[in-house]
Length: 113
Length: 117
Image (cartoon, rainbow over all chains, first blue to last red; front, side):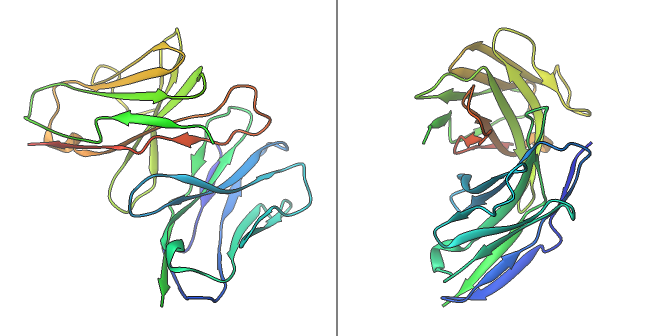
């Protein structure tokens, strides 16, 4: 079974600074998808960024980028120019051939003004 | 992006009663929907995979007779918590993805907070 590990229960960052959230996963599959989802205080989950495992190029979405290391099974999220609205729980997720998502335990991001 | 709705957003019920939660895909058809349970400051725990026109697939440890799932149409899945007890109080979330998409982004409902007194 696949597992997703987020080793940072909580992270803090100053507004306008950069923060990196860690995620590692374990799988025997070669083809899969990785996601970062954000859950703000409203509890509505939304997609931040996704990465297809067959793509070597790291995904970027405006201030959000990932560092995907397939051999190391690592998928970290970098948030640049952090904003107060970035404060939320962030979940790393894996989806492979079963098309059933597996989530990490989440990292709570605190943004200080 | 695609929209998934849930109803009700919050419900309070007495112990022993049943509660139905609806999950609808508003602008796409979903052959598969997922139901999760989330405790405060914890991750999403997958409860079951809801399959349109067939029986749901439950995760290990989830009672099928307690958490009834029906996926009668391509846009609606329902989760019924039968004979609810205070320990069933939680935040329930559904999600769906768009069939045929070349990536499997999940679109989430806004969640339902269930409180059993």
